[in-house]
Amino acid sequence: MSNVFAFAETRLGKLRRGGIEAVTAARQVADQVDGHVHAMLAGPAGIGEHAAVLARHGADVVLVLEHDGFANYNPEALAATIAARVGSGYRAAFFAASAQGHDLVARTAGVMGLSYASDVTSFAFGGDAATVTHPGYTNKVIQTFRLSATPALISLRGGAVLPVESAKAGAVEAVSSAVDPGSVRVKVTKTEATGGAKLDLGEAPVIVSGGRGLKEAANFKLVEDLAAAFGNAAVGATRAVTDDGWRPHSDQIGQTGRLVSPDLYIACGISGAIQHLAGMRTSKTIVAINKDKDAPIFKVADYGIVGDVLQVLPVLTEAVKKAKGG
Ligand SMILES: Cc1cc2nc3c(=O)[nH]c(=O)nc-3n(C[C@H](O)[C@H](O)[C@H](O)COP(=O)(O)OP(=O)(O)OC[C@H]3O[C@@H](n4cnc5c(N)ncnc54)[C@H](O)[C@@H]3O)c2cc1C
Image (cartoon, rainbow, N blue to C red; front, side, top):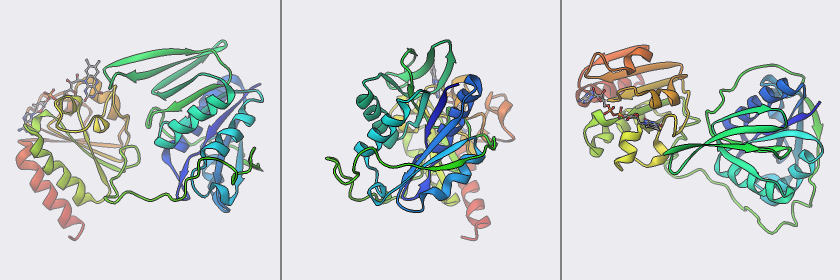
């Protein structure tokens, strides 16, 4: 029996969705190898309060590392602690492919002298190797890697797995840092939310997404206005428009972009190509606006509006503002 490790990422004391996704991924592998999921929470006193959420998503054991030295991200002490832990017979270790997770998985691999796979969109364990996929070259190709090292160190792209509830004991085990958290060379002194409080596509409950039907980059203002009216929405895009430079590549949703599953996904002037659907079809409710009633996006939409997106969007934005009392 081998156990599987998941790093349950938090920021400013809040559990991040990527951390729960890491636990869900670990659960899938643990069920396959008949092992247990050990999920780690690291932070100042009180961080252990998230243990119940991790247990609900399949953690058999929650390793709680509480110390003021982890109030901000402490890369060196965390990597040393995780490396010491997962080096003792774990089959795999999952991290979120967030800015923090990218850094942490690489540092952990460095400490252990192992290879790792980052920004992984799918994984399969068989025999003594793990096979993972990763979109590369600004999402132009999908690369497949075989990880033969144990443990397999993997950071998961947001949305690569959906958080699934699978209640386990979640026995809390207090752990301590492998090195003095105060004696490290890299010290993060402050963590602040960005000014515009731009919501991450992986965390936003609502996504308003635009495609080539918007005609030109400037018309994305209509998409942004609708997102702003919701107040809890992020803006996404198809690859057609990110390739044309209308939006940054980081906004791309789809097979070779972000994988998202918000409560509400509004597709504006998007045809619904299979590669786009691959990144958003698990959204809870899908609304599509397209002038072509036969556009494939309507096959996955719960609600469809056949019309000119440039005319529909301002009306929708006003309606949302009104509904929100603004
Ligand atoms: C290997 C590979 C990977 C890919 N990965 C991705 C990916 O990750 N994500 C992704 O999105 N794509 C991806 N693509 C590209 C994908 O195949 C499509 O080309 C792309 O999704 C199309 O984007 P679009 O819907 O914006 O544009 P189009 O397909 O051009 O569709 C525009 C839509 O807008 C509608 N429209 C036009 N004018 C209006 C109007 N005034 N009002 C309302 N509707 C209007 C049209 O009817 C049409 O349905 C990938 C392709 C390949 C080959």
